[in-house]
Image (cartoon, rainbow, N blue to C red):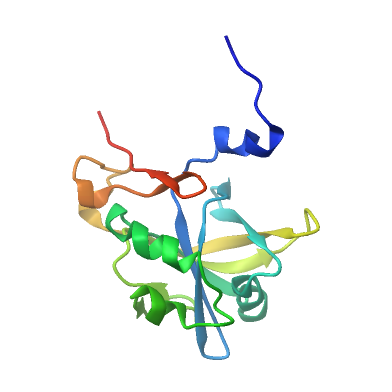
Length: 179
């Protein structure tokens, strides 16, 4: 038997995909933010949509720089990812506060975050308004790379260090395994 839940919790029923760290740089300032709400939109060309609060500093960086990197962090960085989502890049240097570093991107100006399982370098395609607080940021992937031992046409989660972070709501996370 199914039990009705509050509609405020409805998105949590399907939104437990990997948390990604979005990095973008504008006016020589790098900013990061974790994002759990994202989805592929197209394969050819590869296009990804992200839900980002328009009041967030990362949103301003993406709109002004016109590019961003989708970084896929491993399980071992979950505490740093949570910390990154707990402060504003307007107030602090998130790289310093969270103990993260950057690596140059190959196709865009914004840098990737070091130590990731995968990166996707994206150029901004559009940012349509969908709600008063949030917009959808749509980016075309111009370059993608993954740790070879963690991915072979699909994620290989046998080794714990290759498991991705999945947000279940609030400060609850899980880490997938393969069977």
